[in-house]
Image 1 (cartoon, protein in one colour):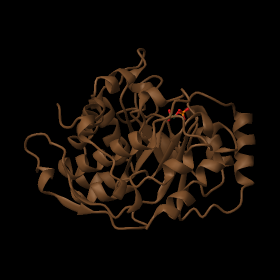
Image 2 (cartoon, protein in one colour):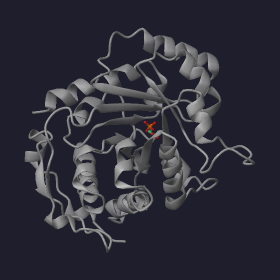
Image 3 (cartoon, rainbow, N blue to C red):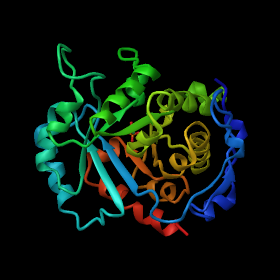
Length: 307
Ligand code: PGA
């Protein structure tokens, strides 16, 4: 499915200054049977439409004691204006319950995975109902480590089905997408992102997108210290929004938050937070330390860039 190519996208200086006041015709070809976005014109109303969100993905790290200590350090921070920034932390499954009990109440807890169906004879799996039962409100799905690790290899369709299951149980979903280095070098970045998103668009209804946040995480930037440039990030985020306008609808394109993930740190978050189509971050390594608070605080750079 060659919907769009990275070469077609360009970051306009105007979009960087006119924070979320974008008006433009979408340009992404869409699958047959859908409305062409070429005719769609939609605008981003300024301010408040998409609350900044910072997720911390602890992956397969930390211990019960380490989580207790980290949560204490996070709690020591002053009021974070959580009406302006939403914070979600994702511990390993065995620590979900414990994290919920020691984490400050204005932060939410996410699982890093769920089973595609309900409870039953599924050894080693965790059902959405169980995640909800211990006070989690989110789940991360489609992370590149689950899509690409040879031992796991989750397919687009499986991830879309899991997302549908999560949403049907009232969990919100951070839906991760992104290209490998090889795919980027072959000019297939946007084809890959659209393929991953289209699997979801075919599986959930337009109304379901209100509980979905997209996390664009180029695989080559995850855990490598090699961050995508602001131009590379904005280019993909803007095209994702155009794609949503065409394959779903204008409202979803306007309202869906698109996070960036991949080597985000206190040193680079403020510049990225100012980009018009960046609505927050999904953070791995830098979320394991109390300095994660500095990444959360980057919502102020986002607000300052809003016109
Ligand atoms: P990183 O991981 O911040 O360590 O690069 C991001 C992620 O995998 O979500």
